[in-house]
Image (cartoon, rainbow over all chains, first blue to last red):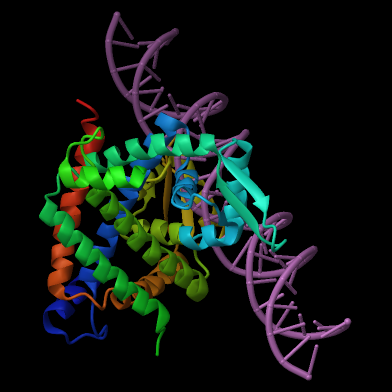
Length: 169
Length: 169
DNA sequence: CCGAATTATTTTAAGCTTAAAGCAATCGGG
DNA sequence: CCCGATTGCTTTAAGCTTAAAATAATTCGG
């Protein structure tokens, strides 16, 4: 009964529900499924191969790009997670001897973190394997597919960002 | 020094590292960023508008499609999460009066859950708004873009699934 | 019918995540 | 200089998530 109504609307645009956006909804579901699936696999492999979690790997990846270290705030912005989250992650990585952490000499509020030599070595090893995993996972895509996906995902991201800022104008 | 080497390899394919898969890596980063971004926004809106979490919304969505209810195991398979996860989610939804839960009359191991009348009503309200949010978020995409993304994401998913089963053959 | 294997679920321990509140240091205007 | 605002970080409480172990019920081969 409800289903019939929805189909009817889709065909005729008459509707008490002005527009149905089934295509967009299905796109979202597929996008989410796809990235969740891959993310779960990467988590599993990181755990099995290196006994590391994805968040810790991500944090180390950010620091690997900044040889001189970074503040916790900068890290939380780049990782797009909360401040408190980074506090805890960094704490655990310091415990493991993979991170150095020190107060800024010029601003006593600021905490600077960087990879230790061991941390850098460990990350580089993991990163190489990680890149191979990703290549394996996307091996079924042609170069053209990858290019098209890059473009379309950028467009989707732009669209999403716009919807987030200009909230109900 | 390392950077230079990587760039050199990319150009010439000489390399001690046989192939670099930068394109795939960047695709994965973009896919992940895109879906994380949207997911965070949906979580935020569900919380602000309906005081509900995404996992609870997802669970209710599954049950809405199965009017006669479902076992916890079926639910965990469809949601692609662990059994223990569903146990806890269902528990909290029952507490809120949105879910009914009863043992199967034919198999005492099995727990059947279904939406209560209130749960169904609440879900339908949320679902309508949720669909509008998704439409808003993807408003910058043309119908052709959506179609192309659907196709390419399906292809990516297929490729990922293949990489997951046939592990290092 | 018995016992071993399988199946469905729950429990546990550990870790991730967030929003909100709190604390300390710094900055900026008067 | 000083005080109010801002900034950087930490803490807290709550919830999600998983893997692994535990529990309980059912099934199946003999």
